[in-house]
Every structure is written in C-alpha cells, then in structure tokens.
Amino acid sequence: MAEVVLTGLGKAYADGTRAVEELNLDIRDGEFLVLVGPSGCGKTTALRMIAGLENITEGFVRIGDRVVNDIPSRDRDVAMVFQSYALYPHLNVYDNIAFGLTLRKLPKQEIDERVRDVATMLELSEHLDRKPRNLSGGQRQRVAMGRAIVRAPQAFLMDEPLSNLDAKLRVQMRAQIARVQRELGVTTVYVTHDQTEAMTLGDRVAVMKRGVLQQVGPPQELYDRPVNLFVAGFIGSPGMNLVTARLEHVNGRYWASLGSDTLLLPESVLHTRPALTAHVDREVILGIRPEDMEDAALAEAQDGQILHSVADLVEAMGSDVLVHFPVDAPPASTEDTRLLAEDAGTADLPSHGGSTVLVGRFSPRTRAYEGERIAVWVDTSRLHFFDPVTGSSVWTTTSGEH
Ligand code: ATP
Image 1: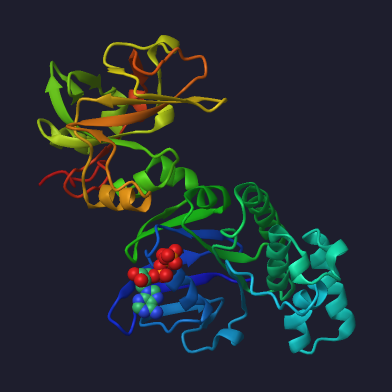
Image 2: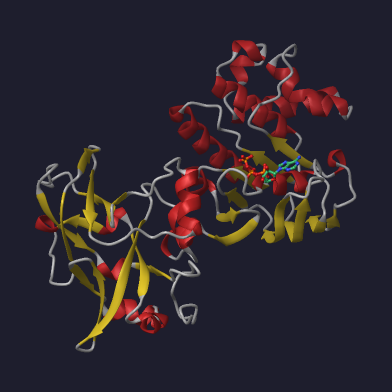
C-alpha cells in the first residue's frame, strides 16, 4: 500500500490535444479517490498516466516513495481493472485469477492459498472451474477484481469497472467494491462519469472538466459547498436548479427576485457569504437543490420563502414526488451550464421562453396536480449563489466584483 501523488501532471497527445492540465492530487495511503467528470474531461488519461500506459508530458507521478515517470507499467506495482474485463477466455476462473502470480513463478501452494482467499472474499469459490463464457456479467467483473486483488498491489486503478453491468447489478457490485477496498485498505483511484458512483464510493471525489481539476473533497462537501456552477450542476440527481435572479437590498434586508416572486435571504446566508452584498442590484445565479423545496401546504412556510407557479409535470417516485414548475426568470446560461446540458444529453436548457423550469422533490403527501396552481416553499437557508460571469460560488471572496 502506498500514497499516490500527482504533481503538476499534464498530457498533450501527439495531435496537440491537451487532455490533462496541471493536475495536483495527493491520494493518501489506503484512500479511495474517485476521478469523475463528463466524457472527454481527461480522467482516463490521468489514470493511464498513473498506470504507466500513457507517457507523461509534464509533471510527476509518485507511488509510495518512487517517482514512477520512467518506470514501465509492469514494474509500478499497481493493478488495473477496466470496463472490459479482459479475461482469458480459454482459462477457467482459478487460472484467470492466478495468472499474474503464475507469471511471477510464485510457489504453487502460495498461489493456491491466495487464489482461494480472494475467491472466498468475492464469493467466487463455487465457480473456480468455470470458463468466463459461462459466467454472468457480475461474476466476470468479480474475476477481474480478483485478478487485481490477488497481486496485493500498492494501488488499484479502476476505469469504469461497472459500466457494462445493468443498473441493479451495478448497485450490488458498487457495495462489494467498497467493502473489499475497506477490508484490504489498498489505495484506490477509480474513474467514472457517474456521479452517483462517485458519491457512494469515494472517500474523496475529484471533479474534472476539460482536463482541469475543479474541486476535490469528501462527497458531502462537494454537494454542500460546490466551488462553482460546474460542480454544483454535476453532483446531485436530479441536478441543482440553476436560475438567474436579481439581488436587492430593501429596508435593510436582502432579497433575491425571480420574476414576480421574491425570496428573503436569511441572516445566516449573508453571514456565511458576505461577498453576496457586492451583487446587490445585479444578477446572480441562484442554486436550489430539489430537496430544499416542498409543497408549501406541507411546510411551515413564511413570507419570503414561497414561489408561485403551475405544476407542469408531477412524477410520483413512491418515496417522493418530483414536481416540475416554471418560474418567471431566465435559466442560468454559462459555459458550464451548456457543458452540463450537453453531458446530460439535453441540448436545450429547461426553459419556457424567458422562464425556467425548476424541479422540486416533494413529500408523497403533496396534492400537486399537473396543470394546477402550486405554492412552493423554499428552504432559503440552503440556497446557493454563483457569479454569472465567472461561475464561481459566491462566498467570502470578492469574485463578484466585476
Ligand atoms: P471518457 O469517459 O469518454 O473516456 P475521459 O474523461 O476519460 O472520457 P479521456 O479519454 O482521458 O477522457 O480523453 C481526454 C481528451 O483527450 C479527449 O478530448 C479525448 O478526445 C482526447 N484523447 C484521448 N486519447 C487521445 C489520443 N490517443 N490522441 C488524441 N487525443 C486523445
């Protein structure tokens, strides 16, 4: 086991494509770090540079106490698990798992013990004689994991290992990977474009956009305190609602106006985000998580906490109800929101002319019906604010002073 440290890591491909820029990451011994971002953000390239499968253009990769830039992949003592499991079709499960150890010419008895231990851990003991073609997708994936684990490497490097599995199996395997990694305590770098996987697996999550690291931190920190619009919109499902509002200072209080509705900003919000005052009489992008809204009839709503609208779409999910409704304010439109829409496959922003469709996650007791008027309570203590020019989160910095 070892820490993995990336210092000023950069990659330019032969055709000039810059895939990774100035990546600095300090992955602690035993940590599970998830690299996440939309397709093409450079996460696979970063992982392949750690693995030694891609030349490093700038910077350094250190694994344990060795800078490995010039050390070939096979000598880096890391084990990769890919999306395609790359099992040997003519070998049975036992021999697939044992393969790396056999190559290293370890004593037969040691190989046998290690293979059987790993098979037990991954619940593969009953299938050791089977060929890969006679295994389910989940079992094949476990064999691929087994092959990595049995080598007892300094680090696991995983590239979308679950993306070939169906949704239910993915959830099961996710739990298994998390358990095995905790049991073994092996430093793990895991690449995915799936923010749910990132949130549930990572001790820390690193979000990348166009080759550049945006934020790294524990999942909840990214969720609660995203540094910019990109992270805010990428983490969370359904995503954070992002709408353009105007900040006003009237009678000593601060308000965010969205069309004909206004939300009163509680003292606590201004206290934690003093830079907001610099946005008075200007536009600001307001972020509201779906779960921070509720049918006003079910909440202790006060003045300055309510949006009025007509429900566009009501989706009953059983445990909660997603209510889509327009507000009379323009959607946030920045490079980040366009990139997020592209990634989500919704080239069109959720807008109705100059208005924005918000999604609230309501209690199943809601009486909201499609086509009927609704009053929506907003937990104004949990609002997020972003600078419409830079896309940065408005906190204590003076990022809003343009
Ligand atoms: P995905 O999830 O789609 O694999 P990713 O985030 O892992 O995406 P990379 O595969 O690292 O992204 O690619 C980063 C950028 O580098 C992309 O713009 C990609 O087109 C480009 N790229 C990848 N491999 C090469 C290559 N061999 N030559 C030139 N450009 C490349």
